[in-house]
Amino acid sequence: MPFATTRIAVAIATATLLLLLHIATLSLAFQPVSPLRPPAPRSVSPLLQRITTVGMSAGAPKAVETKDAPAPVGPYNQAVLVGNTLYVSGQVALDPKSGEMVGSGDVEAETRQVLKNLDAVLKEAG
Image (cartoon, rainbow, N blue to C red; front, top):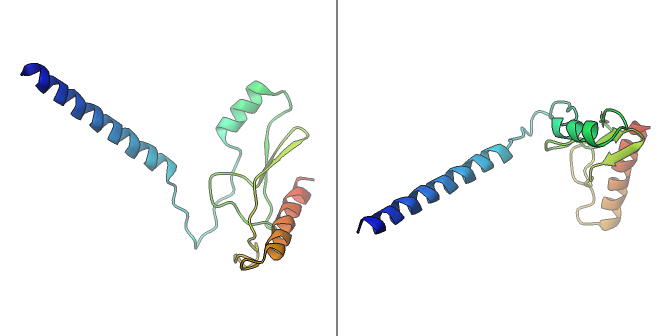
């Protein structure tokens, strides 16, 4: 009987630990964004800086931001310039001036807007 009780206690402790880890992971991943206030300018993430410093000798990464493309809604940059390599984030068909999606399902209009957004980021990067 004590062996069965011990197994149950271990199972409950394990399930509790897994639940706490899951909750901690969710709370770290969730970062609410206010629709009324644009996100603050971002610097390059410390992880990217560490990877760049240790793994490449191309120099410090530089965050690229422009008001002519939609502001990121998550913890990332529009682009990051490392040496002479530019890492560009994906774009959506969002008009940066109005904040509205363009095209309403029209693939050509959406594609044009995405390319305009990418062009603005590339021009800002030089």
